[in-house]
Image (tube, rainbow, N blue to C red; front, side, top):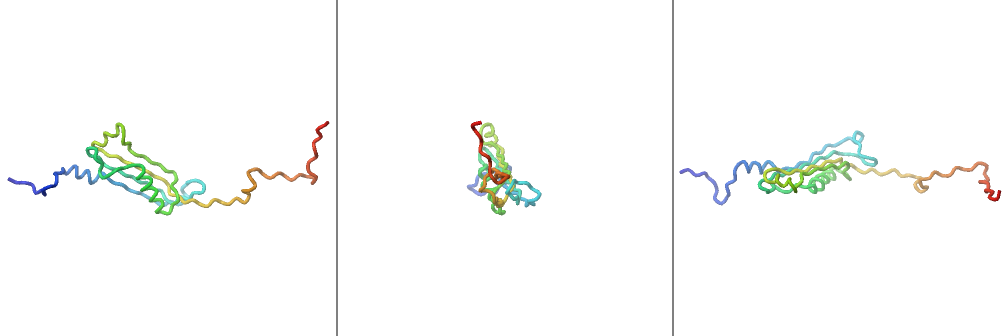
Length: 158
């Protein structure tokens, strides 16, 4: 009688489940440097790069492979870290999306996946120009009076 050579003590894992576990969980960071004169980011902001991050995890029988996917990971630990590494001060035009993990979406954890995505423009904050008339207030200065004598007093009795 022929027996398959399998080490003792290891459970038998079907090849399809093993392949799914290996290929379903991943994350990526994609960046591209941009020319500041070709990308609008807002006043006082100089764009330096566009960044997109993705994270996906597979589920088999409600067990995540290899771990959790959430907005904290893709925004704070991936997107912002990539922007700071590239020399950015902030991330402008932030957009994000995540597959819900409650309600009817829980059934997707039986055999399925969950994904999260975030993107934005890495920017450097430029120094604001100094306004020499900032102490004068928003009102224009009064016009100088002609004749040099000032205004005539009002005659209230007539």
